[in-house]
Image (cartoon, rainbow, N blue to C red; front, side, top):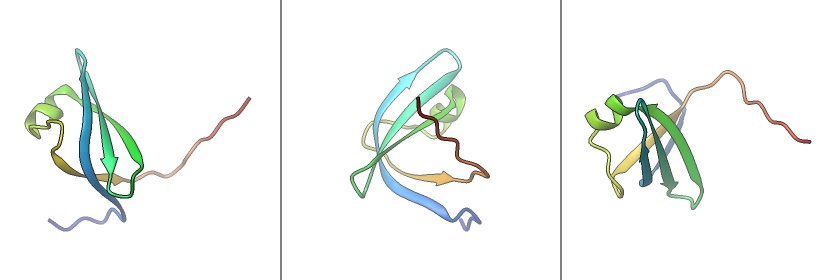
Amino acid sequence: MRLSTRNQLTGKVASIEVGAVMTVVKVALDGGQQVTASITKDAAEELELAVGTPVTALIKSTEVVLGVE
């Protein structure tokens, strides 16, 4: 599959927290960092995600918001 998304980060599923509707998936990236994705419970089931599953995090965003106090 070819994608237009330029920000593609490879890693493995580190943890999965399944909720009633949404699932939070933490991915340990190959570079040592971690990224967290919130996806639908249905999507997580369709992808058959489990701890250790190799995945690619595709990041497509038009803005990044930061805040400090």
